[in-house]
Every structure is written in structure tokens, then in C-alpha cells.
Image (cartoon, rainbow, N blue to C red; front, side, top):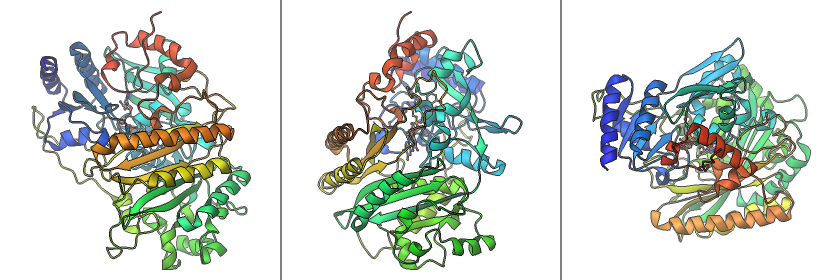
Length: 578
Ligand SMILES: Cc1cc2nc3c(=O)[nH]c(=O)nc-3n(C[C@H](O)[C@H](O)[C@H](O)COP(=O)(O)OP(=O)(O)OC[C@H]3O[C@@H](n4cnc5c(N)ncnc54)[C@H](O)[C@@H]3O)c2cc1C
């Protein structure tokens, strides 16, 4: 306690010396912005929170933390679900002010500050008609955590993981030095590659330089099917896997159970994107759209209506991903039909299954809820939500300056939502594995009403087998050419802390069974590297870094010999002496 008070005193002085850097104490809006996370269960009551305005200020902050050996946490977008990975009872560093972006048209790269969210990046890049390999299911996912862990994207089938598209990384080392690491920099090449999947082990990143690619209009849909269609949807997934070979195509199918009128209800959301204008023939995703009753089946792309719609100049923003007036109102329950859309819209619709949906308790309240309990008003809300937050920071000389709020996220810090991601790594999906995904989701859903559950979600997000083929060697996170693996995500959400143990145990059982089936189906191997961004906290760090662990321990010893980063949570790589 003495140490932390002394550290806070130094941080206050530091704020005076670094205008634009602010310290917040509990009760202020800036404090809340800094500590809140996607879920309440991963938010903590920090002693104080600080928002550095520059990397120079951040360098001074980490020196204070190292000097007093106090617990701390670094938050990018706050989407880690693991308690204490980016939250703390000590000093919360929130990077939201390091949010500058700069596109360099001469070499077609973009510099992105570590406080940015993917939503902001897509918006920034849109006018350049270029884009990065970034997070899917956006809505507040931070660039920082996503890129430090690996980064699976809707563009991964085309361009690999996020970490395979990083050219340069600026980082504040644990001793306060500010360095720029790249494959070209002889001095820091080891650091550059250690940061490609090495999490928060080597310092605090302030900026990435990323490759960009041309971005055209995309073509996509988010369809949501009721339980009665489950068998047909599973067969359609198999048909898709057997027939769709184009790298521009990606699907994410969420088997999601929520409570409706006290009973578990299934919605299978199939988010599909073809990251190019719709091809003239061989339109993608027809196996899904043909499952929709009525006109959508006959004209799965709704192409005729769309052409008229676009000709009228109406397709300029997210509102236009909503069903058009030409579609029968009854079919709205099936979601957003195939249509041309911007990548920002793709990002918006990809987040639909991950939103926190209040249990449906009445059939007569407001707009019609679709099969997932998701309705069009909610979509509007998530697409058009704007920051309404004002700061009332107290506690230092800069107290009256507004804080830099993160984009408000649905449910963050407002709902008593607790939850976790867990995953197994798979190289492919067989019908047997897809059946098991559906079965495990249904089995877990039986406990929703008895154990305060909010939702059960298991994803089928297939990737091509060649996704790691373009990866430059040397990354911290093992991903070898010819051995493409992707996470099979399990996501449980519940209400109350008293049920934590129940749901975490159930999740582990679910993951174990899925792993057994995946092994039996030849869809995984026992020693595959686990994906840290979607792993439960008790996954041993050895399982994340496998054969790279010891070498990474030596890199840590070189850059963090005093184990400053050991004062925060995360998958910690043990130091290895030379
Ligand atoms: C709704 C949702 C959708 C998602 N979609 C995807 C997806 O499409 N693909 C995918 O691969 N993953 C996805 N994820 C998982 C996501 O990659 C991780 O949750 C990731 O950690 C989020 O990054 P963040 O900055 O928001 O997290 P934070 O919670 O802020 O940070 C996560 C970790 O990174 C560390 N960290 C943050 N910033 C820095 C920094 N500058 N320097 C050093 N360490 C830092 C933190 O200390 C913490 O350990 C999703 C998660 C959610 C909740």
C-alpha cells in the first residue's frame, strides 16, 4: 500500500510535467472509461487509472511502476475476457489517447496507435479504398490485444493472420526506453518477432505499421436460422466447405442459445462475406440463402432489388444493410440478406452474435425479435451508437480536461454480465465435428435457466489450410506453413459471480469433449499451439508457445530482466538466463 501511494504521488507529478496525460480516481468518468471492459467479469476496481497522452509519458509511467514494483494493467480495447489480463487492483493504464492513425500513400502502409479500435481503423481507411487485416466482430475490439495475440480476421483466408501483416512496431520497453522494431532493424529484430504473438511480455506497444490491401465493396449477409432449420444449416455448412474454394469467401456460424420466455432457444447465425464485388456467376453462399423461405430462395442475392436500390444512390451507409422495402416483412426475422456492403458494414454485422442480448420475457414488447432475440432496432443501435460520455475527472491538476473515452460498448460496465471465451484449435470441420458443436451447445443450454445463464455460443469459423503459408518465419506464436489451424470458439455468458465456478467447469467439459471429437475426426493434433486471445486463463503458457517458449524466455530476459511485465496479468513467458 505504501508503495502504491508513493507511485501515485510520482504519477501525479508526472501528469503535471506531461500535459495531455491524466490520472483518474474512482468515481470519475475518466476512471470508468479507463477500467471498463467488454464484460463486467474482466473489469476490476483499480487503485487509480492513468491515460498517457504520449509515448514519452508512458515511458515515465512504466519507470515508476518498475521502481515501486506495483501491480498494473495495460488496456487497449478492453476485450480480454480474462480477469486481471488487462485489469488490475493497482494502476490501470488505458491507452485510448494513443489513437493516431496515418496512411502513407507512397508505400501503402498505415501507422496505427495502440489505443485504436478496429472500428475506428476501418472508418479511417475507407476513403483510401484500402484496408488492413483486422479484427472481425468489431464493436470495440482493440487493435493492441488482437495484434499482440495473433489476430484471426475475415481476411485471413486471403492474407494470413494480423501478425503476418505487421511491418514495424514501436514499443516502450520495461526499462522506459522507446524503440522501433522491425525485421530490418538488426538490433531489435528479436523483439519484433517476439511481439508477433508474444502478448504483453516484452513491454507496451505504442504503434504498429501495417500492410494495406485494396478494398472494394464487399458482398455479405447475416442470416439467423431457427432450431427447426438446424439440420439443413449443418448440411449447408458441409456443402460450403466442399465447394467454396475462393479465398475471398469467409463464413462464421454461431450456434447460440438464449432464454426466451424462460426456455432455451437456438439461433444459428451464419455471417458470410465475400471480400470483393459479387461475382457475375457462381454467386457465393447460395446454400444458405436458399434455406430462407419465399423470394430470397429464388433470388438469393436479391440482386434485382439491390441494383435498383443502389441506382437510387441509397447504399451509402450502414443503414442500408437493413432489409429493403422490397423484402417481405416476415422474412426480416432471418436477418440481413446477401447484398453489397462496405467493409465497415461487414464489421458491424459480424458482431451480431456476440452482442449481449437481454432474455426475451414478453412477446409484446417493441419491435419483433428474430430467432436470436436480436432485432432491427438493436442493429441500428449498435451501428449508430455514438459517444455521449463526458468526463468529470478529479484528482490532479488536469482534472477539468475531458477524458478520452473509449467508444461505448453495449453492456460494458452497465450489465452484470460475466463470461469467458475458450477454444480448441482445428485444421478443418467435418460433419461429425459440426454435429458435436451443435450437440454441446444444446447440452450446455439446459443449464441457462437453472444457473443464471445468459447465452451459450459455439462458433464454426472455418479457415483454409493455406492461411499460414505466407507467414514470415520467426513469430513468437507458432504457426507453420502448410498447417493452417483456426480457433473453434466456445463463449458462455452468465449473470452472477456465484455461478462462475459452475460455468467455467461446464466450459472446460465442453472444450474437452470437443477436443476428443476433433481428435477422433482428424481435425486437430494434440500438440497444436493454443490461441492466447481466445483461451481460458488456466491454459499453460507452454501450450501457447510450444517449442518457441524457451527462446522467447531468453528474449524476455534481454528486454525485461527485472520482470516488470510480471507485475501484470497475461500468459507470462518465464525468464530464461543466458
Ligand atoms: C466481441 C469480440 C470479438 C472478437 N473477435 C475476434 C476476432 O475476430 N479475431 C480474433 O483473433 N480475436 C477476436 N477476439 C478476441 C480478441 O482478439 C482479444 O480479446 C484481444 O485481447 C482484444 O484486444 P483488446 O485490445 O480489446 O484487449 P485488452 O483487454 O485491452 O488487452 C488484451 C491483452 O493485451 C494486452 N495489451 C493491450 N494493449 C497492449 C499494449 N499496447 N502493449 C502490450 N500489451 C497490451 C493487455 O495487457 C491484455 O493482456 C474478440 C473478442 C471479443 C470480445
